[in-house]
Image (cartoon, rainbow, N blue to C red; front, side):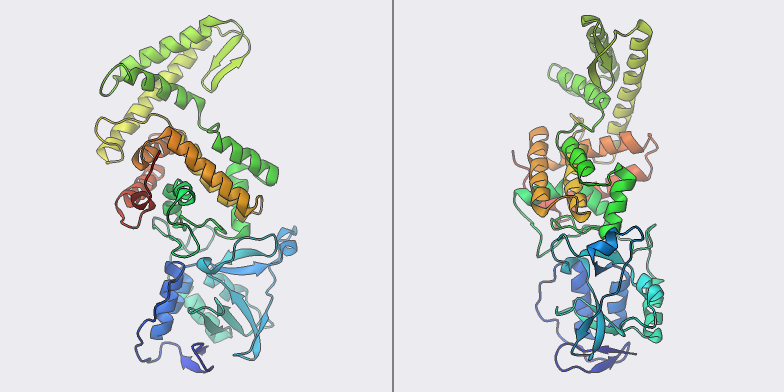
Length: 434
């Protein structure tokens, strides 16, 4: 098996064979993936090159009509490569993708997937990032595909079968904002993007590919079209999706903290929340107090009010126990508390903008506007990245964790620690501001 040496005249060099060390020429790779490919290619270290390929998705352009068909067909559309004198199939790593357009869309697959689905009539070569300094032209004959599969089997994968990169801070060094309002808005989703190992500042976002992003929106949000995306986006930007009961409980304590220095006693907090609930229920017979807010309706019975009071008492206890753990783990400073949980909606709003773009439910301009709005809303509610993080993690845990302090909490805590200590973190390089 051979690989084409695309640095000049076409020729072949054996995979894994001896190669003269070469100094790495200066090139600003878009991301860590392209940098690894580039360095391995310059060294002639094809084992390292294939391993880097196996640890990332390889994106294939697919005509929109095929992608939107009921059967979701993924044709291999070759192009003529003058170096090989044959048809070749071009694939791209995430840092080399163009901004999302109406057509084509890009679908991401693992190296192992390509090895499995390749058929005898398909192009004889796979070309990675054609025309770039990290390009490689890889034979796709049976012996070559065995090497693809061998490397693919030696990397960890996620549930979808693609390489897993969870818990890593990753960024675009070219092609993505690193400073300014847009970068600030993008960094609101950094807790989730570090957890997923995604590029935190990719505004022209493809995510895991067209199918992956459409499926993610459908599974987690029930979104299947532009209208559904728009409603969810606006709801998140307005912080309407965070539980009203959470905000009620936190708001009562926030008001109490203005009169009582230091941490508010939990029992005092509960008694005050109960008085507020009962007063609201008594003020007008046509006003119905619920944990999600105040709505018009029939007056509540004493028994119903008692049920709401019991639920708020329980919620306050959960919040207090989470915050105690946050302080012990360094997620909250001593004496600090969460003032509002709207960070979860602000952060998800910046994510929803990009997920919608990848699924082609919005344009790049619309996504950018949403990210900027999320940044403005978050700055109005919080005074620092640390405050924002605590609010985000509390809401995430109240929704998913059920006081298990399990993976939902542990993953968020790990991402928080990375973002507050890693010198490359946007939280350490983008001032929060006001």
